[in-house]
Length: 202
Image 1 (cartoon, rainbow, N blue to C red):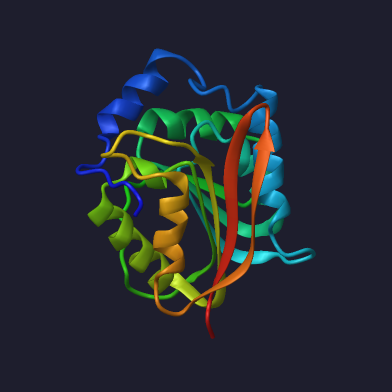
Image 2: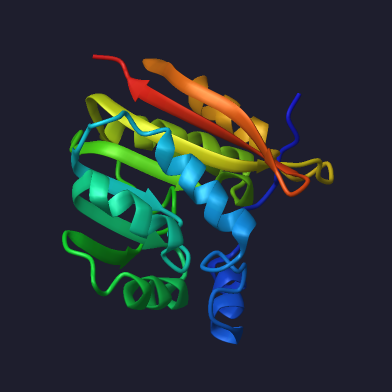
């Protein structure tokens, strides 16, 4: 059984981190982070260009820069307005990229299927069990038939109230109508992260 978190981490927690310093997790310069993001983007289908894409948890915009060439339109979002400010500055030279504050699952409607790609990196285990499962259902509903979901999360052992990286991916794979396309564990610098590419069944 995967561990669960009783409550989602607050937006204020991330705002404090991004207000206290630029790129608090070092995503723009640490080799581990840079290589992890390159591995994440490499899972996207070769030669595929996505019409409409959503990135959940863009942080300072490191992965956003790698996703943008694969997308006609990319909306990069984070629950922290301070993070979005940093991402906008990081990606100021990119075309077809817009930014917005968005907290999942609250701000993610489950209405029209209008997305070809959703990317969630290092976000899921900050959500409560209930919020994670609701987010998984709403993301699946927003994907067009055949649309892709790309997940990347650190694999770790945490306290009993914390969802693990593997548990996050299990929750998304369990949503009916979701098909596994690719997936792998990657280990770098003594750390392991899980990558999965899923697709909404036609």
